[in-house]
Amino acid sequence: MSLAVLTAPGFPVRAHAGMISTQAAIDAQAAAGRNAEAEAAYREVLRVQSVYLLARNNLALLLAHRGCIAAATAVLAPARAAAGPECRED
Image (tube, rainbow, N blue to C red; front, top):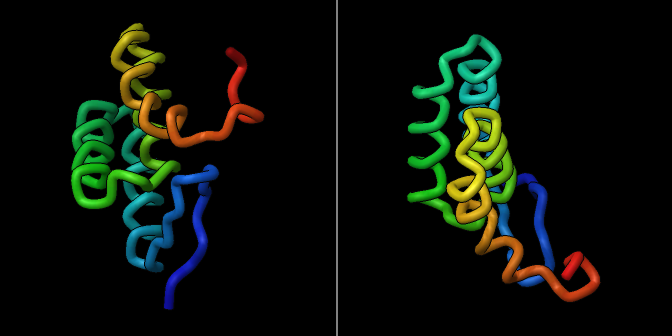
């Protein structure tokens, strides 16, 4: 069974329940302060399914929290590019 996950126009994605469980486990790592492990796990999720917006968003948040604004912006760039003009603040 698949579940709909956060999407943006032009960025369709479906995630299986197993991916949702993985996401929850990664979020728990981040909440426990194990940010390096969470970052690596988010990157692995995106390697497998690059359009998974929740992982993309959370990775960007981790990077921004660490002060890596350019890297966070780069992580979000594919989603921003896929979003329609009504979703952008250009």
